[in-house]
Image 1 (cartoon, rainbow, N blue to C red):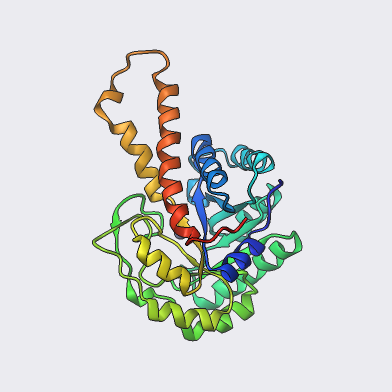
Image 2: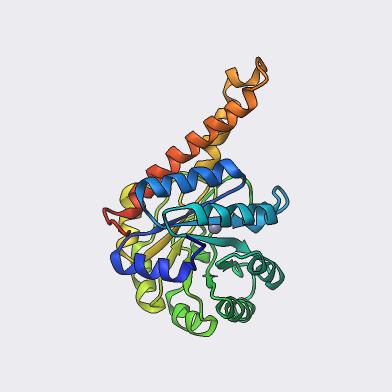
Length: 287
Ligand SMILES: [Zn+2]
């Protein structure tokens, strides 16, 4: 089937109490691993392409690859711009066929975040795509692998949520409740009371970024409290890096060592993704 919009996927997940995983693709191995895992478990899936990765990859080529993979797939696939940082990037992504934009205005003053989110939201909705906006700030943006911990001063304020959602017309809201990007420093501690209050105030599907390192029990609890999309990348990247760093792989012995590495990377990433998807499905069979 062709790419689907993220909005209906998240509304279904919210109704049935599971979460759709949003997994980043940085090459064909990651894309193949994510689609294969989703087909095996028969779950809808969101493929993320992050603006922070634009300098490493050919975005146009990747977007076309995702569209082809979706057309060939037996499960619904949405293509989401992960942490878009400007109106221009959002417009570029929509022109490439992305079916969802996550605009990250968390580093901006609140009124600027609302204004630009709303502008991007109008553009998204005009082309049948969905908007995810962020209120508060999930920590460690783009620090590329340093350990991080969440800063409670940047947690999402439930008192601002209703107004933010109404004024931006976002379809999903990324929340900061103790989650953090990259590797967690110590055990992540999610503020579930805040999440419960946020769900009531926002009234739309909520998104948990920084999924790598959160326990299965915490994921299930968060899904029960309104999380319908979970972003996951660091664990995939680590699984691939472990293969690259294995001592045996450092020796060039045969001409096809590199294709072999590609194959093994795909397998390792798929295994990690499938493990997470099982948790995110929360015992639900959505398709
Ligand atoms: Zn994120």
